[in-house]
Image 1 (cartoon, rainbow, N blue to C red):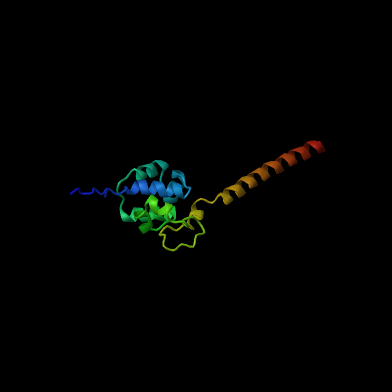
Image 2: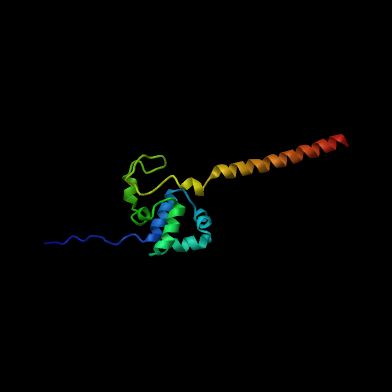
Length: 134
């Protein structure tokens, strides 16, 4: 009688963090800013097989997921949960997709860029008006 071999090796937590980060559309730099560490430190975290629960909670908060969701994360769960993404009404997913906007808000960056461009254009107008009046 053959015994079936079950692959019980769990995906280490660093790879889970990396996978969730990528699914959330975050860069290592985004996570580094949220954790107040360097990008290199985030890379090291993503290579770690184990992380203490306190640090893991901080990482989960930055990623916008629950600690339990991060620990139990599997690609298959995401693939087979139809409403995983933002705005979903699924309650059985332990990954909270609404926190991401607190970390990676491109609207603020766009506004900042437009304000900078507007300032430059105003300076150009002032220069032209000063030349015209000379």
